[in-house]
Length: 110
Image 1 (cartoon, rainbow, N blue to C red):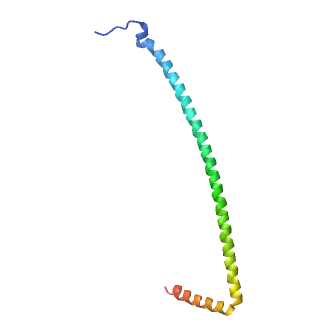
Image 2 (cartoon, rainbow, N blue to C red; image 1 turned 90 degrees about the horizontal axis):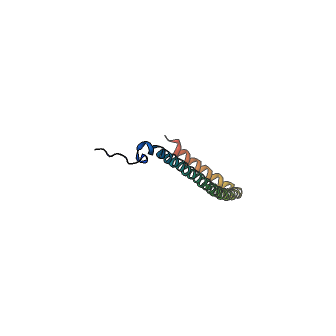
Image 3 (cartoon, rainbow, N blue to C red; image 1 turned 120 degrees about the horizontal axis):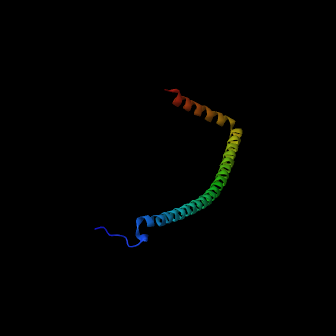
Protein backbone atom coordinates (compact mmCIF):
# COMPACT_ATOMS: atom_id res chain seq x y z
CA UNK A 1 0.00 0.00 0.00
CA UNK A 2 1.39 3.27 -1.10
CA UNK A 3 1.01 6.20 1.20
CA UNK A 4 -1.01 9.05 -0.25
CA UNK A 5 0.22 12.60 0.35
CA UNK A 6 -1.98 14.53 2.73
CA UNK A 7 -1.58 17.96 1.17
CA UNK A 8 -0.60 19.33 -2.18
CA UNK A 9 2.61 20.75 -0.68
CA UNK A 10 3.88 17.24 -0.07
CA UNK A 11 3.58 16.15 -3.68
CA UNK A 12 6.75 16.07 -5.81
CA UNK A 13 5.10 18.32 -8.40
CA UNK A 14 4.50 21.00 -5.76
CA UNK A 15 8.05 20.71 -4.35
CA UNK A 16 9.75 21.05 -7.75
CA UNK A 17 9.42 24.86 -8.08
CA UNK A 18 10.65 25.28 -4.49
CA UNK A 19 13.64 23.01 -5.20
CA UNK A 20 14.40 24.91 -8.39
CA UNK A 21 14.36 28.19 -6.47
CA UNK A 22 16.66 26.75 -3.79
CA UNK A 23 19.06 25.42 -6.44
CA UNK A 24 19.08 28.80 -8.16
CA UNK A 25 19.81 30.52 -4.83
CA UNK A 26 22.62 28.04 -4.10
CA UNK A 27 24.09 28.71 -7.55
CA UNK A 28 24.02 32.47 -6.91
CA UNK A 29 25.68 32.01 -3.53
CA UNK A 30 28.29 29.68 -5.00
CA UNK A 31 28.96 32.15 -7.80
CA UNK A 32 29.45 34.89 -5.21
CA UNK A 33 31.83 32.70 -3.21
CA UNK A 34 33.85 31.84 -6.31
CA UNK A 35 34.01 35.51 -7.27
CA UNK A 36 35.13 36.47 -3.76
CA UNK A 37 37.80 33.75 -3.78
CA UNK A 38 39.03 34.88 -7.19
CA UNK A 39 39.20 38.48 -5.98
CA UNK A 40 41.13 37.44 -2.85
CA UNK A 41 43.50 35.30 -4.91
CA UNK A 42 44.10 38.28 -7.20
CA UNK A 43 44.85 40.51 -4.22
CA UNK A 44 47.24 37.98 -2.72
CA UNK A 45 49.00 37.36 -6.02
CA UNK A 46 49.43 41.11 -6.53
CA UNK A 47 50.86 41.46 -3.01
CA UNK A 48 53.15 38.49 -3.59
CA UNK A 49 54.32 39.90 -6.93
CA UNK A 50 55.05 43.24 -5.27
CA UNK A 51 57.01 41.54 -2.49
CA UNK A 52 58.97 39.39 -4.94
CA UNK A 53 59.65 42.43 -7.12
CA UNK A 54 61.01 44.37 -4.15
CA UNK A 55 63.20 41.42 -3.13
CA UNK A 56 64.45 41.02 -6.71
CA UNK A 57 65.33 44.71 -6.83
CA UNK A 58 67.20 44.37 -3.52
CA UNK A 59 69.13 41.35 -4.81
CA UNK A 60 69.92 43.16 -8.06
CA UNK A 61 71.33 46.10 -6.11
CA UNK A 62 73.45 43.79 -3.96
CA UNK A 63 74.72 41.90 -7.04
CA UNK A 64 75.64 45.16 -8.77
CA UNK A 65 77.52 46.30 -5.65
CA UNK A 66 79.37 42.97 -5.42
CA UNK A 67 80.25 43.11 -9.12
CA UNK A 68 81.56 46.66 -8.75
CA UNK A 69 83.69 45.63 -5.76
CA UNK A 70 85.07 42.61 -7.63
CA UNK A 71 85.81 44.80 -10.66
CA UNK A 72 87.65 47.29 -8.42
CA UNK A 73 89.72 44.49 -6.82
CA UNK A 74 90.56 43.03 -10.24
CA UNK A 75 91.58 46.43 -11.57
CA UNK A 76 93.79 47.02 -8.52
CA UNK A 77 95.45 43.61 -8.92
CA UNK A 78 95.97 44.20 -12.66
CA UNK A 79 97.57 47.56 -11.94
CA UNK A 80 99.78 45.95 -9.29
CA UNK A 81 100.87 43.29 -11.82
CA UNK A 82 101.63 46.00 -14.42
CA UNK A 83 103.73 47.89 -11.85
CA UNK A 84 105.62 44.71 -10.97
CA UNK A 85 106.33 43.99 -14.66
CA UNK A 86 107.53 47.58 -15.20
CA UNK A 87 109.81 47.31 -12.15
CA UNK A 88 111.24 43.90 -13.16
CA UNK A 89 110.90 43.43 -16.94
CA UNK A 90 113.52 40.66 -17.29
CA UNK A 91 111.97 38.61 -14.49
CA UNK A 92 108.53 39.00 -16.09
CA UNK A 93 109.86 37.86 -19.46
CA UNK A 94 111.53 34.84 -17.82
CA UNK A 95 108.35 33.86 -15.96
CA UNK A 96 106.29 34.24 -19.14
CA UNK A 97 108.77 32.10 -21.11
CA UNK A 98 108.76 29.32 -18.51
CA UNK A 99 104.95 29.39 -18.29
CA UNK A 100 104.71 29.25 -22.10
CA UNK A 101 107.09 26.30 -22.21
CA UNK A 102 105.11 24.41 -19.55
CA UNK A 103 101.79 25.06 -21.27
CA UNK A 104 103.31 24.06 -24.61
CA UNK A 105 104.54 20.76 -23.17
CA UNK A 106 101.22 20.00 -21.46
CA UNK A 107 98.90 20.93 -24.32
CA UNK A 108 101.25 20.18 -27.19
CA UNK A 109 101.12 16.42 -26.59
CA UNK A 110 98.08 14.62 -27.75
